[in-house]
Image 1 (cartoon, rainbow, N blue to C red):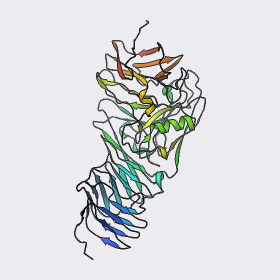
Image 2: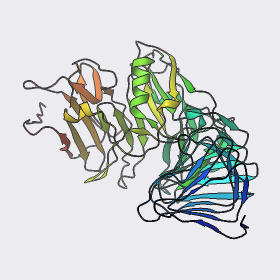
Image 3: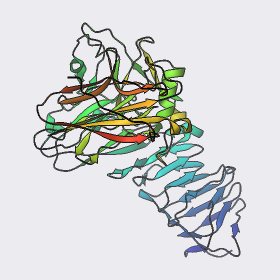
Image 4: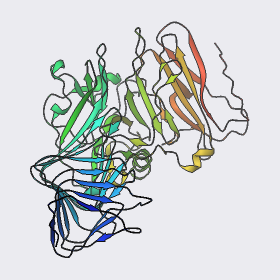
Amino acid sequence: MKSFNENYNVYPIALFIILIFFHAKLFSQDITVNGANLILKSGAVVVAEDVRVERSGTYHGNICFLNSGSNFIIEGDLYNNDNQDVDMNSQSGTGTVTFAKSGTQILSYNSNMIIFNGLTVNSGSSVEVPATKYLTVKGDLVINGALTLQSNSSGTASLLDGNCYGSVSNTGDLSVQRYLTTDQNNPFYHYVSSPVANAPLSAIQDQNYGNYNVYWYDETNPSSNLDIGWTRISSGNLTQGRGYTATYLCNSAITRTFTGSLSTGNDINIYCTYTSSSGTPDPQGWNLIGNPYPSPISVVSFITYNTQTNQRLTGTLYYWSDVSGTAISRNDDYATVNLSGGVPSGIAAPGNQSKVPGGFIGIGQGFFVKVDGSYGSGNVVFKNSFRQHETGNQFFVPDLDTTVKFRLNLIDSDSNANNILITFLPNATDGFDPMYDGHKLQGNKDISLYSLSGKDEWCIQALPPLTSERVIPIGLKAGLGGKYTFFNGDLTNMQDIEVYLEDKK
């Protein structure tokens, strides 16, 4: 057999070449797979340094099929120079890829995703997954060393692990980064959550604030003031599934790192309360929770399960959004989403609309939910089946694509802005529709726009389909004097519908 002390290149003849190793060990420095398939039969062991995947001709497909008992040991880095996603194991493969380099090993790939069946990170090895890339482990995941999901201004790396498909052994460290924007002139508030178990509080503490920058929200406080529930946390570990507000004042953006272990249970529960207040009903049922996984989760799956199946929530999510405004004021508020659609937090400047929430709850994202008073206190459930890679912005189910909906936007002379969403759905009623009606949660003291139904204030309101003229009461809380301008936001399926804004005062 040829000595493998030099680089070993696999090139296609005709469509592809298949390399088969029977119960043997192959030692090499580098392996380059160029438009070919690499197949390891049962019991085969391949030890390589750097592994590179190239593209040749029109070849597309998996690069490595590892059968039962085989082990592909990488002692260097893994590069994919192809734009196609790399599958290191076919669905029929049950072998393992082991990262065994002493020190940092890099996964570098042009495509969005790399897929393993079994993945092991040896003790002393540290594997880094670049920001915005997706790592899927279909079988067993063993972390004896360190695995890091990196984050930057473009996004955070995502992991779908053995909890979804196989088993997890995590005696090493899983580190998940989260990139956070900051401001040197004004404190920035972020709602965050830990994507790993047993992450220390220091992951989000800021010593510049003397450990006074992290709070959780205690809904059980009986005060009628919604702000009274904020409770400082000064020691211990972060609780998975709980949301925290963290404040930062820096000259530039920062990256926080959560280090801990993967949870090995099927579900993660967080207890949410509904407490009758001594005054107005405004504070009742509001709980700050967060995504506990190192991957995004589906908004539709989370809302549907915890509203219909679990019967706990009203079915709307509230994300805090810090947006720099003018020198006079700041345009900070809640961006809101449910199954009717999403409402942005505001407008940072005229014509520059804030981002509308989409179909995924991001990694490390904290958010408010409201417990339905008819259900009462109990667990809100994060299921592994909710987890997805954020491979697209598709959110709304097809049935909603033909519905009539519009956003009404409002902006004042200081660029404070607010928005509401009105939808007309076949199964909606004039009363409260869980998952489709969203209560108004005012975050900006200077401005609040809402629709009215009785005494209820809505940022998202679903109504029955239009069959005749319809009057929708609109309310405004204005904290500043000056000029306020209404204008249309998105108009969907409203070609033959006229909308009038009437001021009765």
